[in-house]
Length: 288
Length: 292
Image (cartoon, rainbow over all chains, first blue to last red; front, side, top):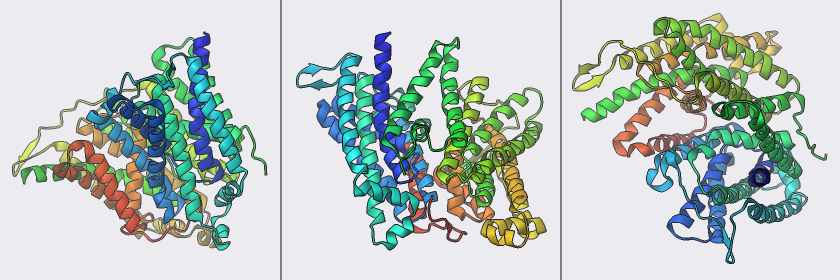
């Protein structure tokens, strides 16, 4: 039972990276993207392939996964350079579907629908990370570092400017601020975090397949951001914790296993709609 | 050459389905300005219900029976979901998420009822025909004809009737319309309802060819509908239909040049390149929304 609970905590820590990254993009800067799962996937596949085919160690593949995520995210942000938010929705949606189709179809690279198995577990300075509590400590340390860095970032003028992008872009431009650079940096940072999360995901589960990076996962992370609280870092963490832990409770109810998957999704989606109506600000309110 | 023509024929077939998806999304998006992601789930639900009904009656009747169901679903989404949220001043990001949430509930309820995998319909509607060395199935003949009729009716209604003029006015400038004393809400609701009512038709046409439908095929359908709209021009119903046709043809002709794994990637990339160069689409004009 403890192993199971520790596993849930590891899962929460992985998704925390995803949700904090998306929080920066959607909660702070107000930029919509449904491609987060695809970028998560790029990080996962990059680190998996590098460690399996090229023998990269944990840290090098982590760095590459982060870079890949950041780069892809920058590409998604390109449309926001010229036109309105509607195009961002469309292009991010398109990128998500495109990457998902590549994950499924490029059998030689990504293993196709079967995915990649036996991804090596991390080895840090000779220490093998095998048990959930070891993963929890490793990922927990990274999470702490990331949260600390982001906390400094969002409480700096940069964070204020990001919020300003959400509130009124035109005013910002009239004040002479570079809105373009702000948007692209928000995308790059959130993409880097998603890439990191991908590497952590691949190293923990040692098996990845395209289904983990489908559009439903993007919606899940968005729900975490919304329900946890838009515009706050703690909201990102709370959302991840809530949306991973709560449906785990479904396991203990008397439902057959093939009903569990759809039931979980119904729980997530219904919760999302409920929050849109009842408490759009999310659980942890933003300080104004 | 024969391969090229064969791909073209299939492209026209797929394009007809896409053009109807585009028409549907255009009717909803241009009038309500909401990203109705739940439309895809309604589409796949329609497909599954048609499948179910086909056990009792022929496919044409099944499609007709489904039409009021999807129309009602669209109406409900607009009236019970988007309008109340808009009244509370919800931001557009939240509207999109609510739409995704509803879509998620619908598609997973369908998964519980029908099972998560793809299901196909085995139909005998007359064998394939050989025309000029190219194999053309009955579905590939029927689909473009039906699509043409539906799009024709839609464009006629919007351009030539009095009610259509109200729809055009709503699409172009809602504020001006309300200033004239005309209530936008009923026009919008009816447009959304009609846009959703079309959905069983492409679902049925898709299944005629033996292609499968799964509860999860909805979101991709919405994406194609949206791409068709942005390609053809955001404020133009006919343009959206044309956009759908173009996407279908491009997607299939791409196989002539690249291996089929890259098919989706190529057609999406062409689309994005086009959009960056001409954001308003073929027949549209600039959209005015500045923030999201």
